[in-house]
Length: 133
Image 1 (cartoon, rainbow, N blue to C red):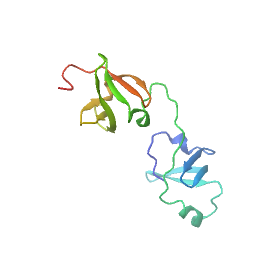
Image 2 (cartoon, rainbow, N blue to C red):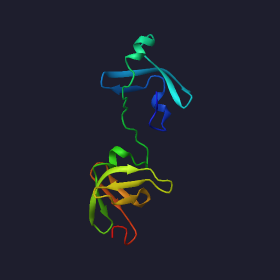
Image 3 (cartoon, rainbow, N blue to C red):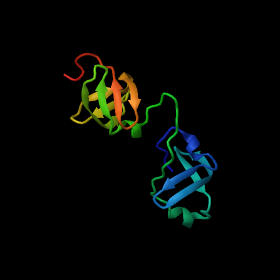
Image 4 (cartoon, rainbow, N blue to C red):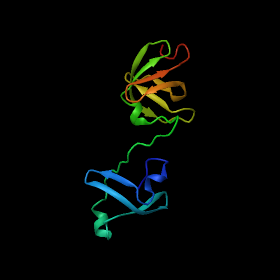
């Protein structure tokens, strides 16, 4: 399994993951060559495991104080500290200095300028003058 998060507790024994075919409960997991080998309750053999190949697994959101999550940012309106609506977040782009909010129209806003968040609704940013010029 390829994990798209740095939160390895998602694969803790007993954790539940959701897929298009239903819930899967982790029976065991371990790291192996940059991926994870995972065994699920009720999946007894390799043939059973093969039926799960290619599934996208999801988990319930975690609450981590101060963390910004992609699913809470994408679709939210971005408003400056002065109240100017500058667009909607359509994606996030990784960047070594600071990941970037990608707004409709192509504007980029470093995450370090985010000062407040109403998940999925509004992102307030305090940006330097001229960023949107």
